[in-house]
Length: 361
Image 1 (cartoon, rainbow, N blue to C red):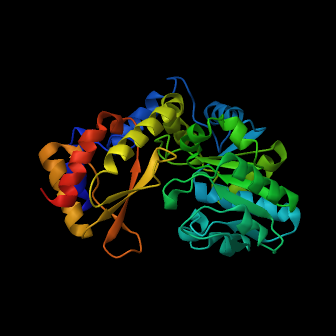
Image 2: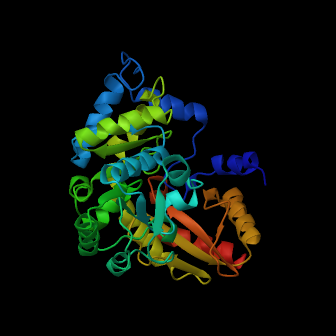
């Protein structure tokens, strides 16, 4: 089915199991514009009130001295790791085998910055302190992702996290946080964003995942390191003539969604409790640690997707249109992101709909 076809079906639904309702390009742009005062002026290559005040707000929220707005998380993280390694005279970075840098960036850290990767731990579980203690290469930085998206939004326990960051600092390495979904991770720890960010030397957050913006990212750091980041942003071509659209589009989510994350987690766990009773379905992890979790569905993927589209047409509830492989024959993976729209779907209602998808009736 074409993208246009399934998007038309999705737009015709009344309820969506997801983080946000579907919006057209023009609706998203209008929402971003509405977040700004009518007399606000665009920035000029990152200099201007909209961008500078936004950066200051993120720095304060994360308890850092400074923050830099960049057009992508890929750029933000590669720059952070480059700077950390250059400061320490080391070229190796440790991270999980399912890290975004490893799976989705065509080894940009190596091609653009000459960095080497030390993959730590097993791809199907979180990094453990014992995995780090087995690393002998001199590291410039340790990258930790909170939560670990590819394995179901999992999080290490707080004491384990402290131990891992302490191990990195004890080895003379920087600790960098891939906090693309930090907003979703904080409720599990019942700690502020500032307290979590304080463990790390640099923190990256996404402006479009949990916040629903158009794109972009922020890298929070010390004043000195932020100055180096701004130089590298220009070298990467990331100091665009105007960066304010990224800030504007993230403001509604920053204002309205961050404080709702505990409620999203509560609903995710209620959904999981109902869905675990559905034959042919497994919740990963169970219970969810964040509003992002996975469902493993048994059945032929194309058939399951077609049934989900039938549910969307007939019951006006959007569940999904595609599934990812798990590596286990006959089992596919669905990533569930619980946001405001998903709150309108009751746990019992979700379980009923997934029974239809899995049983075909």
